[in-house]
Image (cartoon, rainbow, N blue to C red):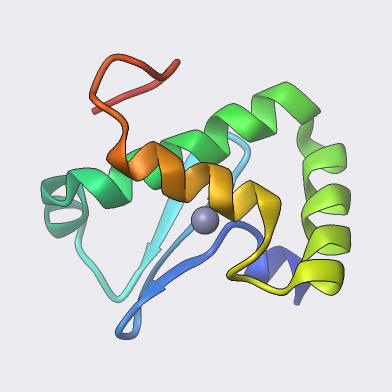
Length: 95
Ligand SMILES: [Zn+2]
């Protein structure tokens, strides 16, 4: 349940979830996903967060902050949301 929520990004029934270095897609094809650069940037930031924190610490922190802040004000989501608008090349990973 918590893993299901981890780093999820919902857009009208479409969802991407990052676990470690893998972006899992639900209700959207790989091609459609890759065509939406902002969305890809968002998920790549979560991959960076996974690397920074380590797998288990990411999940623990994500869950704790979800409990404390909910989804929209979640600091790790806010960071990922900022990454959507940053120019390409300013992040560790970009598409
Ligand atoms: Zn997210």
